[in-house]
Image (cartoon, rainbow, N blue to C red; front, side):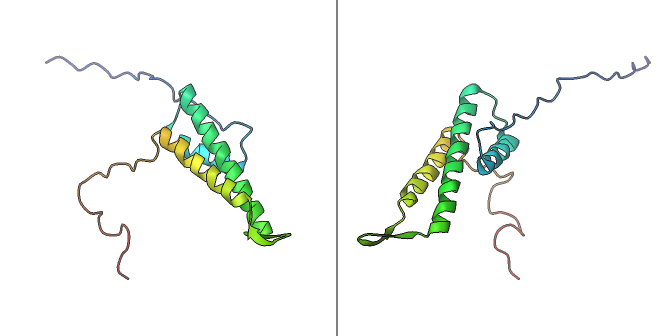
Length: 127
């Protein structure tokens, strides 16, 4: 019987570097960028442009949320109280973020490894 040849280590393609978020993004946009890149590793130019726009939109929404939280949801004007004008812009920015992420196909829940209900310990459990 012939002897098996010795195994040799073959080096494969090296892992590609993680694409860092653009410097123009704030903290919440950069956090969203890193989270999505960790799960999906988007590399194409169109996908990166859409992801950047989605993350910028998230930044804008979070900045508006902070302003609304500081000034209150209702503001005083000469005719009385009215809803803060940034609320509708915040809602639009959040909607744009969701729409852009949907256009990347990131709104679909991953498939479960098995059919049927989740196993014990997943979701609501009895005390």
